[in-house]
Image (cartoon, rainbow, N blue to C red):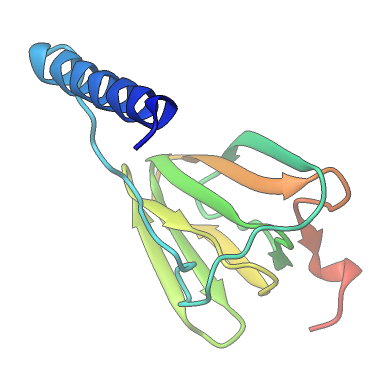
Length: 145
């Protein structure tokens, strides 16, 4: 093993052990995994678009009883419901219900409708892993079923 390889391995080991010690040494930092998946909630494999990457984060608020309308996302998106209850339905009838604090990987290129099924506004944060060339959302009026 040459000197450069030894130096790189040593640096990685020292950095890793420092990181582990700093995380273990404090009780003021709490990490809670919310979502880790390779598939959207309908079981399809997540693939990222090609092109220049662009991440967008939005807060969406849906009034009690209101619906998003049928739409799709041509890019992967991931959401967490901050408040309320939300039901997402596919044209097939398959549904996903989210309660406060739950997260999901959205469907990609699949028409769906979100409906607030609770008594308070449904507030969610949505992270889109898109690119500079694609829209984040396409309404049903823009695309056939």
